[in-house]
Image (spheres, rainbow, N blue to C red):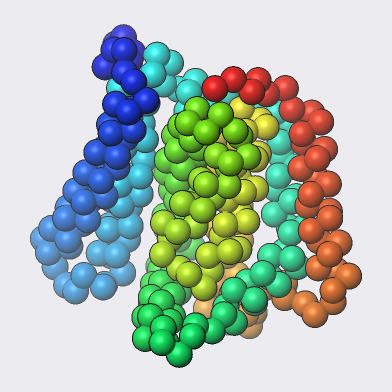
Length: 288
């Protein structure tokens, strides 16, 4: 098969193609999920149905649009997606996920403590209810399902599909649009966090998006950001799993929280230092 499938596309045509594929993928996966749940029987909120819906959303809603888009408009789809050898130094990104924990927990606590003005209290209540329902779904996945299925759906599948969509496609498209790597990474991280529709977890997820975006840009490979995303999600899954099985009693939402200002500052400094080291090793080419 010769790529791209659509020849001589403009930036506008590419954006339109991407948006149409993404909207169709999300809508079709949602409708298909409900349809499969009806055939499967039981309530749509049953564990088995929720797992099916989640898999369909990730594969058809996120992964498929990204892959189809690249096949339609680029000559070397796999290369464009970042299917390249992992530079050994890029694995330092995994260490950064742990050095950032005290600072990220401080940001999480601050984000969660935001209080809306009196005139917007109804909106705040709705946003907190949405956050609570999302947490309950995750807890149900892990408490009622197996550790393997939770790791597969919440950690592995989410990491692969979201990185293909947000880093391989959106971030690279924005780099071409803005002609500025940092603006593209920041905007992508913003969209990435907003897509999760969790205002009271927006800022820590935004910071995670920045880390994933920079490691992808510096390495030129999508695999390091996928691996970092997986490790982040897998850590959360494991903490919830240990809690639900009675092995620990950890406050997962505020894991690593501390009042030690020095530790919080050192956490940020150490993480930035890791990315500076990665940047020194990087052999990226800033072409748009």
